Length: 83
Image (cartoon, rainbow, N blue to C red):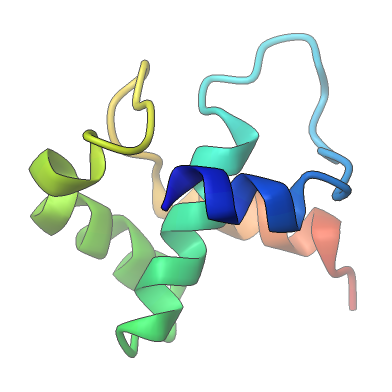
């Protein structure tokens, strides 16, 4: 699963500062995608989704700083898709 997601999204540039990223870019993209596919429609829902499924998700994705917060998801997507 991880390889499929990474191969598809590898051309996306990480808009975050390289100074101190706490969460891997692909982990944020993949968990966002999985949450949306499961019907989640909010950033706080993405955080809740990862918290509920963390044990299963950590088999495929890295969480070196724990579960990303809803603010982390929101900042990422606001930078990827500014309105």
